[in-house]
Length: 109
Image 1 (cartoon, one colour):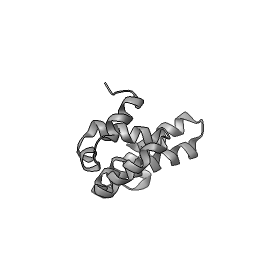
Image 2 (cartoon, rainbow, N blue to C red):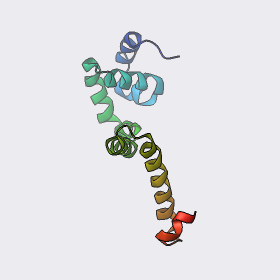
Image 3 (cartoon, rainbow, N blue to C red):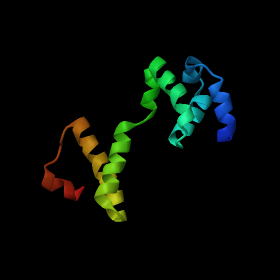
């Protein structure tokens, strides 16, 4: 169970950036604070990112972009919201192994 935001602020602020980079729970609490708009978390978060750039990879940029595009393209159309990710999954597989079928044959699959 994660501590409340107020509790985690006091705890994560007492950690050094290098300690936060290796303590997943405290790091996620700090990130949660920042994502909740807590400007007080920003100086320490910047230090963590400067000392451990790999922490920035927690954000799955490609997935966030994909979700944004799907949301923009589909609006309230739930069919499109479900169809686009499935099409993208199929396309990724085709790219990974090479196309084995002509586009007209894919409809039969």
